[in-house]
Structures are given as structure tokens and as C-alpha cells.
Image (tube, rainbow, N blue to C red; front, side):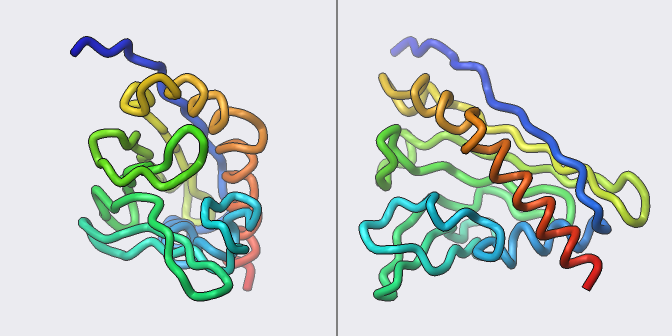
Length: 162
């Protein structure tokens, strides 16, 4: 099968927080900065979790305590790198087949002892099939990764100041 490659989405944000704090806020405090509107479960979102290990899950929990997978942790390398599968369909439902999941790689690099650059690459949209370009457009839009990373940067800076 010959799939047309779809260009990755790349975003970066400067965070006013030390490298270890930026990584910890991104991974261990996901629910504190992830937009509550960005969920795929039927019931309202209350929590989001990245299990801190390669092979772990990342998922949301709804107000009834049910869990809905978003994907798997493909690499967990604190405090420098995280790779997640994006097991979400173009119409924003869980995708159970890992062969149809795109990937999100997040790299954390210290600018100095108080600032970190966070670089995100969302790639392999072609794995989503016919909806791959639609998925790319959604995550590249202002309400996608650009807005999500801005929220993260604000919360990480507040966490570093606390």
C-alpha cells in the first residue's frame, strides 16, 4: 500500500520555567492545563493522565470515573523527551488500532536555568487514512496545538513561580 505522506505539524513555545519543572507540568499535571473542551468521551472531562513510563497509557477520565484512551506512551525520557501515540480518529473518537495512530513527540530543551523551549512535532497523519489531512488541519488550527501549548506555557510559568 502506497500512502501519501502528510507534512507534520511543528509548534514550539518558550516556557518561563526550569527544564525539570516544564517536563513535570507537561506530564504529571496534564489535567491542569489541558483544555476541558478537548475530550473525546461522551461525558464531561475531569482528568487527563500520562502514565510516566514507556508502554504506559495516556487517557482522559470523565465525571463518572470512566477512562477513554488517547494513546500510548512510546518514549518517556525525563526531562528531555516524550513520544505519544495519537490514537484518536479524525472525527475525534478513540482509535483502537495502533497502526492508525499518528505520533506526537515533545522535546524539552533548557535555554538557561529559568527558561525552557518546548518543541512539539505531530507526525504520521497519513496513518489516519482518508481523514489524515482533516486531522492535520484540526491540530494545526489556533484551537489545536498552538492554543494548547500556550495554555501549557502559562501554567508551567505559574508553577515555576509557586
